[in-house]
Amino acid sequence: MTEPTKRERVLDVIRGAKGPCSVQHIKEQMRDQFGYASVEDVSNCLSALTINDRSRHHNGAPQDLLIKARVRGTTQVRYWLYDRATDGPKPHTASEDLDWTYNRVVSE
Image (cartoon, rainbow, N blue to C red; front, side, top):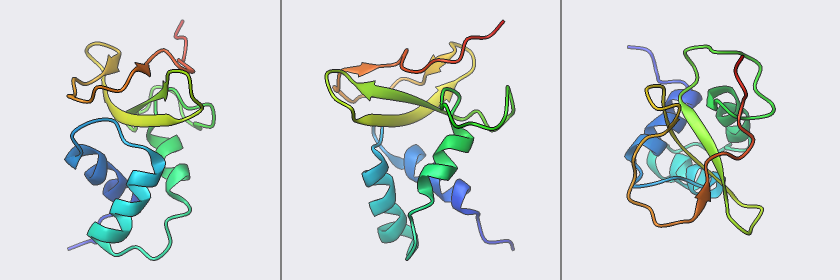
């Protein structure tokens, strides 16, 4: 059986969370849950999986699994699961005030 990729593990962390995740939380969980010694490239995984990331290198690909939001009034960001049906985030229970329109991709 093939070992899951780091991208798949990043998704595992986010799917297992109760709400949107910070990069720091994802890195900590990658270390704690999966024993990764090096997690500095987690941001690259997030960029490739996120529908509204400025650094994404794909358009409309099946890898559009996450959406990025800014915590209002701060420079902090959170990542959460993307819902193609609503073109927004999947429901969650977090109470943070998140701006889901942050850095949105405009489709033609």
